[in-house]
Length: 33
Image (cartoon, rainbow, N blue to C red; front, side, top):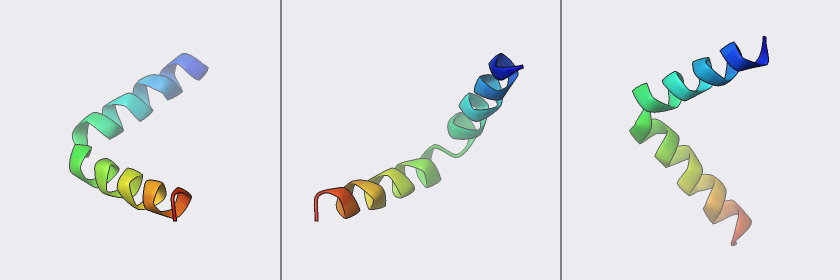
């Protein structure tokens, strides 16, 4: 059930918005380094 996996990921990102933003920012810095 990929759909349930998408819902789980969406809820996880929604519940940890700051942590996800932090990881995304670090990943962006790594890409644009």
